[in-house]
Image (cartoon, rainbow, N blue to C red; front, side, top):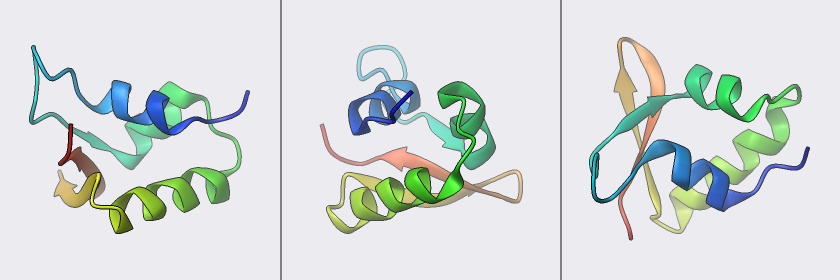
Length: 69
């Protein structure tokens, strides 16, 4: 299964129900059933550079929050 950016964004947040939701890297990996971290990490980095995502910390773990609609 290929990872798409929209799948990442949709999992992290629902703008009507939970607009400021934060998901950890492990939650993303589990939901997307990622076996190769490099593709996911590359997409997350690109989305951070585009200011679509912000990297934060959740329970001492790397986590992400959507910053743009």
